[in-house]
Image (cartoon, rainbow, N blue to C red; front, side, top):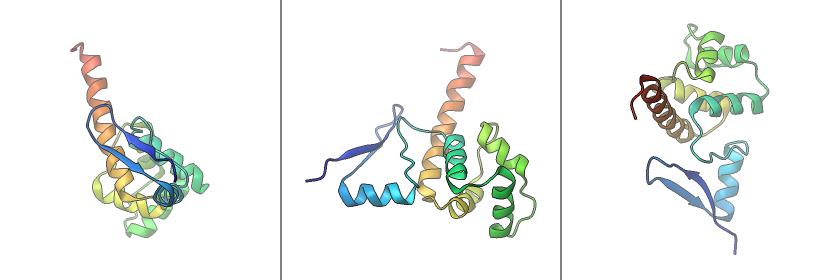
Amino acid sequence: MAQNRRILDFNFSAESLVLDGAAFDAFTAATKGYVVESGAPIWDVIRHAREEEGLSQRELAENLAVLSGNSSITRDDVKRWESGKRIPRPRWRYWLSRALHIPAELLETAARIARVHRARRNQRESGDT
C-alpha cells in the first residue's frame, strides 16, 4: 500500500490535503513536481513554475498577453508578482495557471498564503504583536 504524503500544511488554518499513490503522482506531475510545503506564497509558486517552464519574466508576460488577449501585461507585472510587491488578481491567476501549466487551485491557495504573509509582515513592521 502506498504511503500517504501530506503536501499542503498551513500553520494558520486547518486546511490540509493528503494524497496517496496515483493521486499524489498525478498532482506532482500536474505541478511539475512542485509540492507546496509549509504554505508557499504565490511569488514562490510563480517563480518556480516559470523557471520549470524555462521562461524568462518577459517571455511569461508575452505568453500571458497572447493567452489573455490583453497586451497591457508586461515583464514589470511579472517581476512585481515574483517579488511579492503585488498579488495577481483572480483573472491573472487563471491565465497564469494556463501559461505555467499548473492547477488554478494551487495559485488560489498560494495567493491566500501570500495575503497571510503580508498581513504578518505589516503587523511586525507596525510594531504590533
